[in-house]
Length: 145
Image (tube, rainbow, N blue to C red; front, side, top):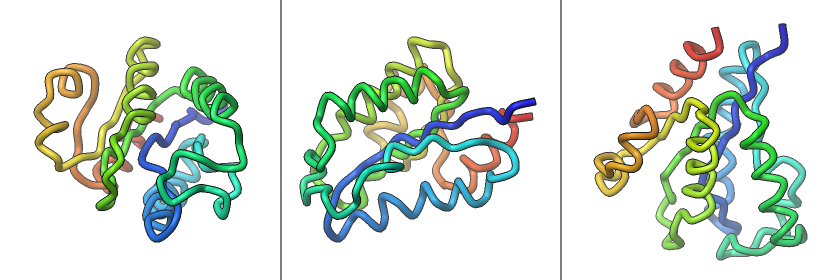
């Protein structure tokens, strides 16, 4: 049986925040390696070309959107980390990915401690909300049984 696919949606920003944007994804990949295949929007991107604002890279914008759209469509579970790690740009792309997954009736796990998301009716009604990466990992393992 093929492994279930998990898409890792979340903040992407270059400069000093890039390491944090990558680290949580890598933790899930390492902890869930035997259970699932992770689809990461940062796979294939040249990290050095991601701008400080996180809105530009060597990949054209339409190619980014189409690639991420297809990965969300392909996934079995969407994990969305709504932490901006102190960045000030809104989570527009990540919220779009949540909407796409909701449209396709995919299980959605949202990682957040932010009350603006944690109690928002759109998030509460469409996702299972957890506060930590570890809680998300446990749910991924549960969903992938």
